[in-house]
Length: 351
Image (spheres, one colour):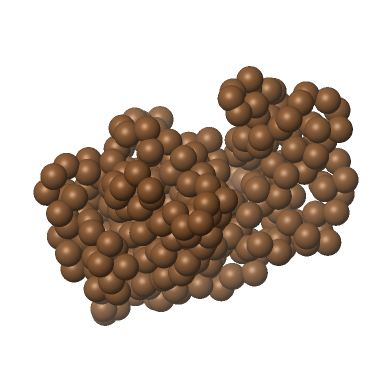
């Protein structure tokens, strides 16, 4: 079972993800606008930051009002590591929440959490205003409100170059179409997990936007409005967060325990798989050649969605059960090793 070949844990942090999914940076830092640095303004902004973080981690707009969070709402300092003001403009309060104590508090409240490893999203965003029509590209000034909104809602957003060829493709009819063929062809060069198409228009001093999201063979769509480009960008990213989160959240202690077998393993893939399964409490049980067995907590649909981020493919069940090494005693002398129990995994995937 040669499990020792995968115990080079010290090297794992140096291995880059082979999947397209991204680890969201600054997931536990929230920036909230403020009008001053008074105690009252800080307290109000801290409450807003807590609400933003809970929604970012759960995708559930009602989660912040969960009775189990009453003590945290009364005293958010319990889960805050530091805070400070950024002069801007705009002036903001930066609140850094402690990941460990925050997750513990949310899980004690029975909330399902979405881990930091999330699908990368390529955003095709067309703005129509009195100044004309423009496709938002990476590096443009118009990209700033989109990036801020994506960070605020915990989404790893990528933007296209918006060169001449892409401007021909990213037209209003294509962005509002339910057929993603044209955009998917143009998106291949960016290797993102999901494609987001947004057509935003300014009318009568207000902004409104229609959006479509494709992740694999699943589609989401909607429309939002806001007072300005920043508001409509935040509304789109909030809607995307709320639609995606239920596919990936993992509820500690409340999900079904599964045995997952993955074929085609190597050290780099072991690092990738470990990060993907972290939200589901993934624990390696045994290794046999290039096959590894994990014990995880989560629904089948959630696990399939998470593993799709690394482009793993589900395969038919293997005909041979997998042996699992018996647990070793923590203290005292070890008795003679018992035969490894034989189990049959419920889920089978390969690279």
